[in-house]
Length: 585
Image 1 (cartoon, one colour):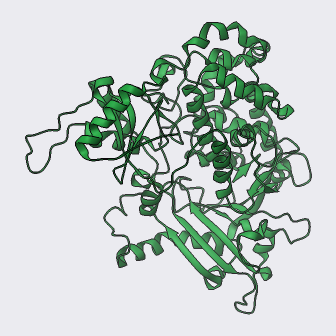
Image 2 (spheres, rainbow, N blue to C red):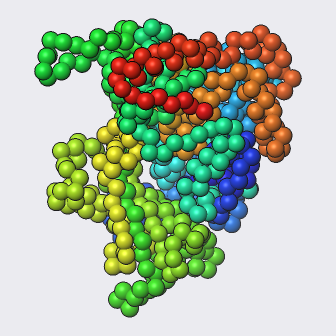
Image 3 (cartoon, rainbow, N blue to C red):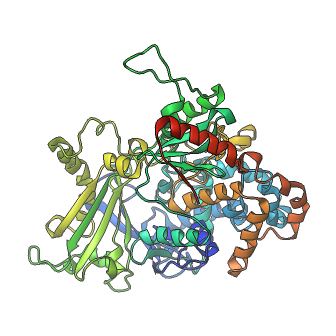
């Protein structure tokens, strides 16, 4: 589910695509479909109702206020409380137009790169009092204002994509919804040709600036040099090849997988043959403590996936797909209907939305993009929330009869998500399907135990949260910079969190940190000229209050190339272990 990819917007993923002078053709739609029990019921599927969250003007025909009036227990109360919540968070919401995630960096240079926000801060001094609220748990604010059950459920559903309902989600997650989703031009997007074209657009853009993408190049170990304070100097691939780092190693793996990549050769490990002999290389205590902490952070479960290809024209019990009333709601063929390819299905409000057997989503891109499958067919992706427990899978052998049977058992709720809503005969129409288990998540996405991501609930600071851990701001992410010199983290377990746009933003913050302030500001100034909506990216004249003072300190010394020492360290390891070496671009 993507919003704001159709044109220049506040979506950091779209900002990056524009900064790289790339294009991403999309088709748009204006609402999400929800199939949920009534607020006063539990899990009686006969009482499940369909409703639509239409983005754009809340008072427009079919808009959010119409939904609240039709489905809330008290529509006018729900509207009143929604407006009160928006008013309470208005200053923080406005700050999203004062400074972008692309302006951020993790050194003193941020004073200059974010200086364009100073006029907003000067006219909204209350933003300082609300700043801790940005990273605090959203439920603390919602509980003070919202009592209407339908609206509370809606807020939980809008947060759950970050891994938590309102309790555990950062307030920042709702700020974007409050501000952006109710602008008249807001729209969701389906990338034409499939979501792979997002990656291809970023690849094309990166290659313009010298990026080299290597596929089938599995990283087996992050290499460090004990003679350079255990500086990260490169990576070893699974095939033994060594890639040398000219400036730094950036890991977008989960914290758990990053810890494993660091721990392969450098932490004390006893072997079975000589249990009294330990490997000689050890990290300093502070680094080892960080590695151990990183590997033991709380984590979400995995996601169950069901990919299905169906025949829409096949007659099942005398009916084609178009004969089903629920399908008319999905494809928008009913009077005043609108195509709605993305849907969420809740089994029961009495169960956690993090329960993979309770909350499912399905996406049918072929409704808007027929190019993704043959004529008369549809392709569907159904997936659970990120709460599928790994423990019940870990002893099952992929391909075994037990494993295949358990896949079918656990995926039944995904089939039901379609059967109980819009395609009652989906199993009879299926020409092909495949189930993705936590084991598949682990193997193909290289995510430890198939995890959806780190699960540090908002409300307290995560370990190694950087300088923010010494402030009243409860920052729920470990720092991008690490105790291992020249090792930087990014990805969905870093600020700003789970989701493709957020992960892209964290990558941009890491890239900004690795480059000089001058290079960073050049990028911001160039991007700010591409569209009026990006004007706020420019640090403006206020940058000169700080730029002369901090520019020479960026990037920090650990990110300034030290090729001679690194090559010597890697050459030594290569000779000792018989590995080949290759240079990065």
